[in-house]
Length: 553
Image: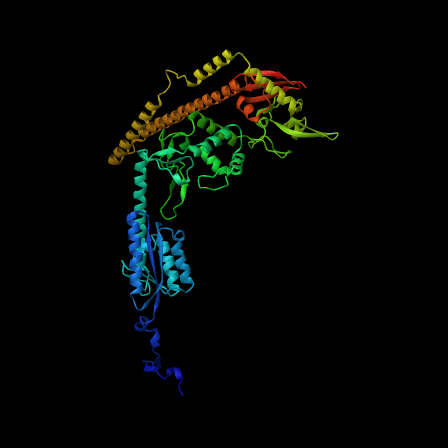
């Protein structure tokens, strides 16, 4: 008796004498009957920009697929998934695309229909990865423009070809965009992200204009920084005062404060191409460390911060960031980190060993007092520094305040003369000094000459031009170094002049009134305090004046 499964089977005898029964497929699984099963169909639409003409295209796509699915009796609407203004090179950044994939994994979709491979993805790997994953789930994709249906494809060759073409198209578009940006940079075209940039808004003429109330926040940050406040404390103070950030956040961070202090747009300039996108697939932004040219546009828009203050700020950022470490063992505070709490932490040094002093609390017989001690003595006793004295803070402060007051009360005419001489020294130009514009012109000539030499070498296929290349490159590098030095000197002079103006403003303010200890004024006035004995200090002021004062109880 034969098994029931063979009742409808068709027997066939092979040449080897074997009987083989062919069991036909069930009717509900034949290709003809599949079309009678209602499929849950989803459509995916995408446009890569949010411009007006693309918005119309986006609306047209969603409308088209809604009609197409609803008018097909054998299809059931499973949803329209659409990403507007999104690049197709990175699937994870397309929210609706990823939602569609999740719904596919949840068994809510049987078939996806989309306009083309380019709409689905511009990344070859993404196209293949997701199509394979969906196919493994029994879900097909119909690409209308290419006429591809992954349910009926025996291999991925054609899909790979079209996916590669889509990626190549994306790479060409990216290259054209980069070329366009380069041309804009060369023309000095500056882009402002007004929504996330504090201090400016787009004016009626399309150019940046200052927002007065926001500009006050920027000026506050710069003034607080130059008065000695740390980045962390500036951020904490702004947060405590309820000042919103450019993005409307209530919490400020030291990183946000630092970015404002380093942003040249606040002095009216603009550095273009600070960062660049390495490739159109990852879209990762990379800091431009010289891989691509940069363009600096001076006086592009109204400045919030005066140039002297800006240059002074950059010098102070460099100084704080470059403080050398002088402590290795012992106490808890490292001198290599900028401290904004006490001005003397930055200023007070030992006259014997050159090591900074540290603020300490002494407790004897139930009484506490604040003293300053040489860090070397604290860590190594008298091994390296034998005679440095311990100085009480109130005595130290009184001596320094007395010296500042004496300077302020010096003959006003003498101080004004000093200011004029210092100003002349900073702004005066040597008649034989190099002209930066002439240097820039010469660099341009050398660049043109190098280009001609490259063409000549390629034409003649010769290596006989090496010495000429070397000479031109050497001259151009020397000129670039000289130009950078001139720029640094100019910025330093501007910063010094700004610093002098601040100092003399302080001097005028305290000339005829008693002065109490003020951390900010001491930072502005004093460059260095050296303890040269148990009863003597040497003070160097920022205007170049030096004086010795006695330490008396």
